[in-house]
Amino acid sequence: MIKMVPYTNLVCLPTIENLSNWTEMKHSISTWIIIFIFLVGILPVYSNYPSYDKIDSILKKTWDEQFPTPYQKVKKKNINGKGILKYRGKQNTIYIYTFIVFFSHHKIEDKLVVEDKGGREMLVKLYHDPQDKLKPYWIEIGELDEEQDRNKFLGYTN
Image 1 (cartoon, rainbow, N blue to C red):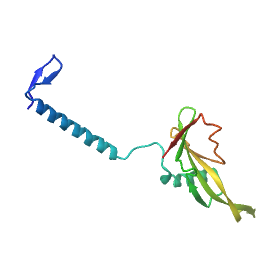
Image 2: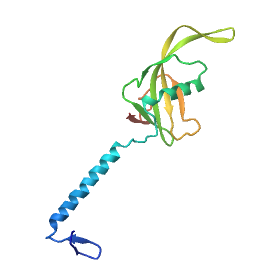
Image 3: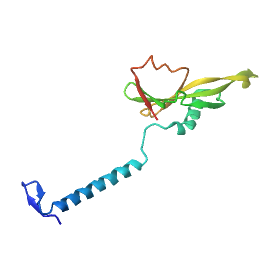
Image 4: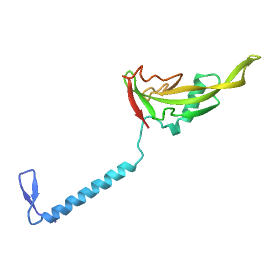
């Protein structure tokens, strides 16, 4: 047990005789701090945006809500290899996912939309606004010009 000598009314310091016990106690505290940091580090981290691994079903659902004909397949995700783009919205951060999808040509026969020969690859941007509870996802088709809105781009994240 550490013998404490009052230094002031609020603070107590160890005596010189029990300095080795004080050192052992400091070592024990630092060990528990390291264990706590390790345990917190291995817990799953919560984020308000999904990763590219979990975005396929959201892309499909959002596409089906926005467009009358489906795409055939996703050719490539994360087309620039940098990750998910963070973009400054009006009051919050918007996340932009990029895909290249293959979309087959279609024609109308007897008032029905039917697949035709051929198709093309298109750049698709899936936007995610975590603050919007009614419609958090939407799709835009076409190029992404980082230079045009560079003051709104906050960088990339994985």
